[in-house]
Structure formats: C-alpha cells, structure tokens
Length: 126
Image 1 (cartoon, rainbow, N blue to C red):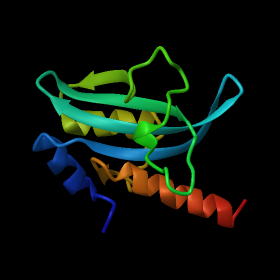
Image 2 (tube, helix red, strand yellow):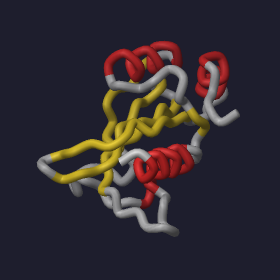
Image 3 (cartoon, one colour):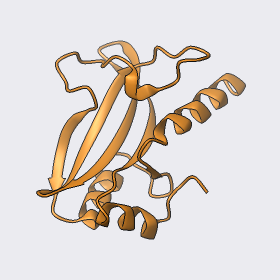
Image 4 (cartoon, rainbow, N blue to C red):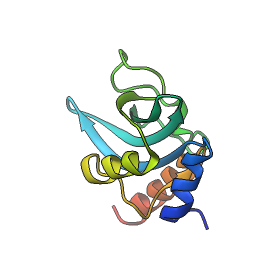
C-alpha cells in the first residue's frame, strides 16, 4: 500500500519522518509546472513546504525533486509555508488550506512515483 492512513501519516511525522504528496499540474505566470507538498518535522514543529517546478520530464527522467524551480529565487526543494507545533495541526493546514488530500500522503521519496502515475494517466486520458 503506497498511501498512508491518517494514523500512519501522523506516526511518521511523530517519529521525525517527512511525508509528501503530489498535488498536480499548475501554471505560474503562464508557465506550466508541477506542485508537491512536504511536511517535515523538526525542533520548532512541523514545517510545510510547497515546491513548484517545471515539468521537464522525459521517458527516463521522472524525478520531480530534480526538476528546475518555476521561481529561481526559491530554495531547491520548496518554499516554507508554515511551521505548526504538532503533526495533527500541520496535516489540518495542509489538507484544509493548501489542497492536500487526506488519502494521498506518501512517505518521503515516493512523490516521484505519484508523479509517474499522474503522467501515465494524463497520457491515457488527455
């Protein structure tokens, strides 16, 4: 099972593990791109990061974490949106304010597989 239940998502964050979610295609300033969200626990709480990148994929290059940023002034792996004191609060903000789906969280590093599924579905259903 790729997607985390709410209990597993909370558990991962409580154990200090990052979770992620592919959010889909976006357009910024007329430029097409992709967005994903990451929740990363640390000493100050759980930081929410949003990453917006150009879709430069090829048949063999599908690692969206390596794609160029849509905004070159942003950090490589995303802009910090918020820091929340608890994992439950971070999940709530991500799901209610930033478009994350409570049923689609994945462990760190799995967001690329989610993008591959999105890309395959887009080819099948243009």
